Image: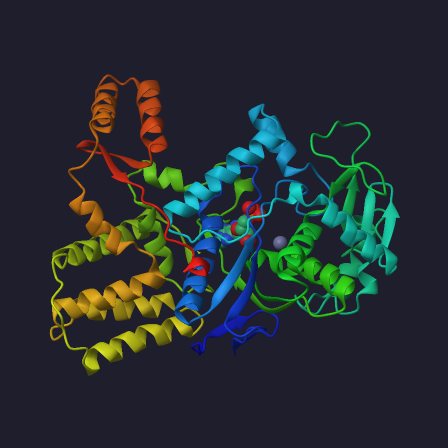
Length: 480
Ligand code: AMP
Ligand code: ZN
């Protein structure tokens, strides 16, 4: 089957390019997954919503794909460099649970969030802790090539031995060299990084493994090189991540994989822009950070947040505020309302030139580097059209929603099933309203958790507790 042409902005070449996969119709995609020591903040989730639009666009263009997203459950240190505590051990101390429990709980929380945002589940979700042997083997291959060296705290990559090191991020190595004496300790070059860290003698680590170099744990960067190679081969078609990863994490992935395999690691690198707030980039190190659950508790539907994100291009920085989220919510509810008015429409219609024009305008926007902002303006042109029959509008909007993922079809199903709330759930809602009236917050929280465990989204409104079924994920396109 022929695929449609799709243009994507490639960080490697800094240009928008016509995408070509290595195998016809099939795309190998890798995305750096979450570090599961805490909840994802809504900035992290922006990166995954942006990637989701690309996956849906590839599907629309006629591709099948393998989409690997790893779970970083060891080795990511708090300073993102080679020093400091492992984020997992930090999470464990914070909550008085084992690092393994922390990893399990926050992995589940992450996928609950992505499901609520209607993000298609990856086809393979490898955990770093399940792939330590592959990582050790990869470090050994680099060692055989003479690229590594040993310090008192680990095995390091000598970036001077990879001449193209600075190219991807256009790093200014000379200026980095100038600051060398203050920063680098036993490292040979400021850009060198740990492949394997030894467990510190004074500290009992919860996550550690035997290796040819002694007990320790893998560096964060080697995880992605090892797992992407295992599931997708030496050369990826597309690699996704937030743009903060360009100068260090992705640069290091390239250095490792290309030195080990002698071929290009990835053909198309895509990077999402940041979600910001008043104090700058949204980040967990600020202490308090915004999670999807916080938005839900304030009465927003996760899809309000998705709609808010779609209004901007994925390469444009986007500033979060409740005012803009409110207007996104109004926009999405307005759309849902219009869509519900068409629910009984199964009338046939002639697909005329106007219908075709709007359909191809939307597709062209999406196939042009995923321009969802432009796609949404076509969608509103459809909704407002004075000439298109409602059945044609419904059909177009449904087509567009395959990419936008706003679950408009499900909103009709939910409206029709609206009265079908089971008695036991209705009883919990009633009990929760009672607890809130009596200011029994512990009980009201407990009952909210019970509703969420039964897969309902819970919001507190002036009328009391309102609930909505959180909905199930669509099937992955690979299986279709
Ligand atoms: P982490 O869980 O910290 O490894 O990050 C997961 C993903 O979120 C990575 O791809 C980051 O680049 C991305 N990310 C981190 N902060 C932001 C932000 N403020 N806006 C968008 N993406 C972000
Ligand atoms: Zn990675």
